[in-house]
Amino acid sequence: MDVFENAPEQALDWHTSGRGAVLATVVETWGSAPRRTGAQLVIAGDGEMQGSVSGGCVEGAVVLEAMEALEKGEQRLLEYGVSDGDAFAVGLACGGTIRVLVEPVGAVIPADTLKALVTARAARQSVAFEVNLDTGARRLVQDAYPERFARDQSGFESDGAVFVAIHNPPLRLAIVGAVHIAQALVPMARIAGYDPVIIDPRGAFGSQARFPGEKILADWPDEALAEVGLDARTALVLLTHDPKLDDPALHLALKSPCFYIGALGSKRTHAARVARLQDAGFGPAEIARIHGPVGLDIGASGPPEIAVSILAEMTQSLRRGA
Image 1: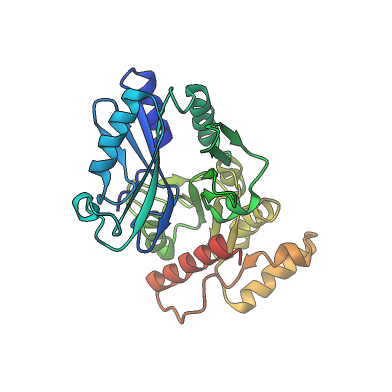
Image 2: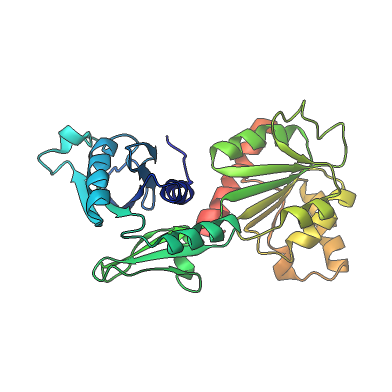
């Protein structure tokens, strides 16, 4: 699966360097389409491409359309599916149908609008790119579409004319405690699209030998999390069992909008944790945000299975708001 998610940035780079750029976005799908709505492919004026709108099924056809659209300075709305006479010719034989919006940068997407989108993404700001296919108007919106932002769901509005592309910050996972469970959880989270950071002031635990190539902060958790930041696209997992490390992190997390807070420990350990938080002035609603014991109850045994249960619970919280 193509996991390229930097199409706006690449498109801006190619446009400003004079190569020309076209953004192709999946705006609607039916059946077993291989990519979700909002997936993007960026095509340079010389034919180079990055990203994917169909996992390789129709990219060749989209590139040809994009090159013509760039030359003529016009948007195009394409549709491919098994009902088309050329479905097999373009490769979409898996039973799905997709619509793809092709937008040359400059002629269709204003370069200033694209630059503002890239700037917002770099600042980890949630922003929607709104396109009115009837009028051709395009704008960035941050104070609307709360349900779309919460679900990370791009799509058409009920009028069928306005398409909203949701650009949420990348998912992050902050893990306090560089223990065996973390060694299993980090690569799983990466596969699921998270950018992990490991926090542990104990050098023997948080080492590159144990977590090769990963970002490790050897600070106390409250100091490290203040640096990392806990926003609505961040999950926090506490794995140390040590109140000196876990509690300062919990105090920050419960005052933040992070979408998931999980803490390792038995029911007895969690009860003691709750008592400490109550003494610190936290109320029932705040404490109820903590998933403790951490992970879905799937009868997990051993660090890898516990990591699976944690990632599953994170996904449930992200997608269902549980």
